[in-house]
Length: 435
Image 1 (cartoon, helix red, strand yellow):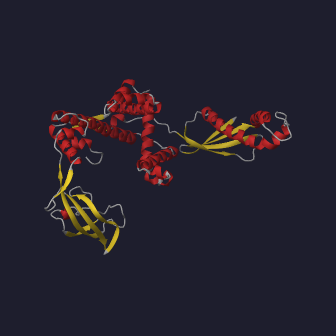
Image 2: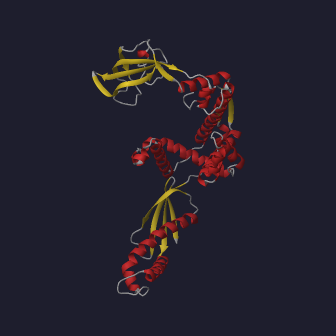
Image 3: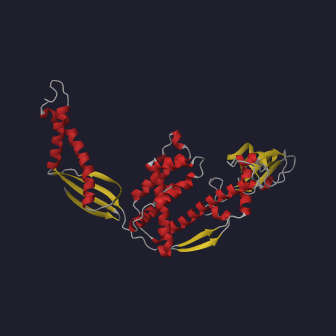
C-alpha cells in the first residue's frame, strides 16, 4: 500500500492511498468462494454452482463491497502509518482510470499542534461571600412570594400589585401583530413590558381606561417595531394585591422541612443558598479561566469539529424547547445561530485536552465520589442516585469529565493571578453579565 500526503491549506490534508490489485483480487476471490458455498441458484445443487456463474451474478457487487471496506480499513492504516491525527470524518473519493492498482483520495483536517501557555498571565476575580441573616430573610421573602396568592382589592394599583388588563397596541393607527391581549395578568414593576407600560398603570383602578404613548427600544427583537412610536389602549379589569403565606408548618412542608420550627427552616434555606453560591462561584471562576486560556492560546480551529459542535448544539436546542417530540429537524436551525459559541467551545476543548495530556491528569476517584455524594444529597433517597450512576458507565464517565475539567481549572489557578473580591450574595449568584 502506497501513501502520499499533501498539505492543501492550513489544517487540511489530502492523502492519496493506492491499494495493489492483487490484494483486492485476493479478497474478492475469497468472498466469491464463500458465496459459492452458500448461494442457491435454480438448476444447481447447493454448493455446486460453477464459479463462472457466481462471478457473473455476484462479481461486481462483491468487488464494490470489498473496495468500500478496504477504503475504510486502509484509511485508518494510512493515517497511523503517516502519524496523522484527523479531526472529524474524511471525504473519500476513488481515483478514476487506475489499471495496476486501485487508488482513492481522502481529504480531512488534522488537529492543530498546541502547547498550552500563558497560564501565569490569566487574571481571575474570585467572589468572596458571606451569607448574612439578611440574605436568608430576603430569600425566604422570595419563597413566600412564589407561594403567594392574589386577592382583588378596591383601590388604585401600586407597584408590586397585579392588574388584569385588556390592551390593544397600534402603530400609525394600525394594530400590529402581538400587540393585543385580553384578561392578561401583569405584575407592576416586573419589567415584563416595554419601558413605560407598567409605570403608566400605577394609580389606575378597576374600570379605568389608559392610553399610553410609548416607544419600543431601539434594540427590540422585531425589526418592524424596533424604535417605533406606538400607542396602547389599556382597560384595567381588576387590581389584586399579593397575600403571602405564614411561616408555619404547612409552608415549611412545601419545601420538605417537617415541623413548625422556623429556625430549622432558615437553616435549610441557608444550606441550599450555600450550595447554590458554591456552584455559582465555581462557574464564574471556571468561565474566567476558560476565557483566559482561549485568549492566551491562539490556535487554528478545525472546521469539522466546529460543524460537529453546531450539530450537537442544534440537537440540544430542539430538545430544550420540545421540538423533538414534534419531529422538528434540528438541521432547520441556521448554523449561524451557533457558530461563534461552537467555535469557542471547540477552542476551549482543544486547550483543555492538551493541558490534560501534558500534565497526565485523570479524574480523581475521591473527587468523583465527593461530587456524586453532593449531587445525591438533594434527593430523598441519595443512595439510589449513587447506585444509579455507578451502574451506568456512560453517566459516570460524564461525571468524571466534569471532575477532570475542575482539576484543569485548579491547575490553571495555581499559576494564574487570583484576586479574592468581597461581593454580595445576590451579585455572586447572578449569571454572567447581570452582576
